[in-house]
Length: 197
Image (tube, rainbow, N blue to C red; front, side, top):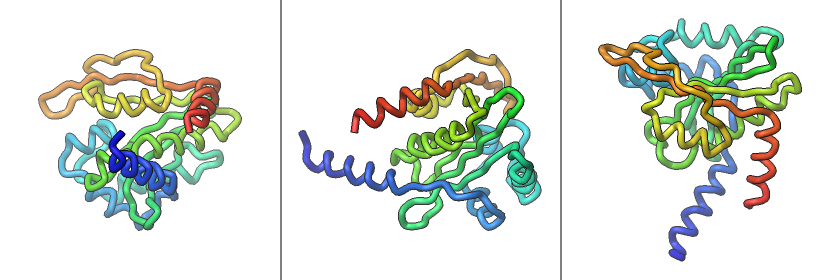
């Protein structure tokens, strides 16, 4: 085995263990907005309800949903061990049906490809299932985004189906893949992940 590769993997895993979710606030608006360069990137991140350029009104609408009791939405920034902001994720709740939906997942352009997305999603799943009423967590991902689908599958999500031609972006139409994980599947996945350490 290549010792340098092994050491690099250990460093990456160690760094990923020091990632933490912090509440998304007004002071993060400009940082997050700067991560998107065009309408396609905004729609990929936030769906067709959002527009480029992202602005204070759009972000404030998200934060309003975090202030209900219980919250309709939770929003976080991902912070690394040095205090640098490197990601963002949100969680919507349907309390009546006991479901949560992960959405608006992004890793900062400078930090993409460094293995940060999966640890962030695991932390969000822990938050979701910390509520006893939540039995299912789901997400929507555009079907062409194979990299994201691979990450979601890696952390335990199962594909349920495809909503064909569900989003219009410019002259393109995108299919949406629906994925989910149930509470007992998450518990099993978490135990298996610990066993692998």
